[in-house]
Length: 173
Image 1 (tube, rainbow, N blue to C red):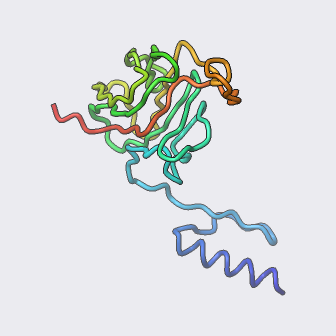
Image 2 (image 1 turned 180 degrees about the vertical axis):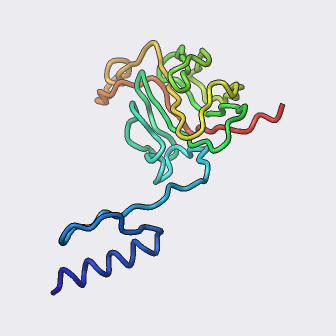
């Protein structure tokens, strides 16, 4: 039977990636694999795989960056809790943006993002970090539509800032 041959070849291919059969019911199987123990601590915004780490509030990829609305989030996987520096490169849209930074729903800092590109390096105490998935939120006071603030611009997206990179770096102090 052609379906059985296809299923067998798919199962063999997934097995090569560490998946194993957990449940089987007639012609259906549930395959699982152990999550990677590897940490994920940096996001190259604009790269083809950046959306794996992005949460809410992001617009489509544009060359080497992405625009975000008033509220945007990213996720990092931490294996060992420790002090970090939150390092990110960004610029505000239209005017400087007051931004609150929350880590795992706790307010960690408040900054102003200028309209010129800037690299931030913000110390993050280990009390904000958990083992596993950590979510960082950037929440701006305002956003603007390019169509409302630029002549002959038809872009109706609500933009607050653009990001080029975001990373958690070890704080060695």
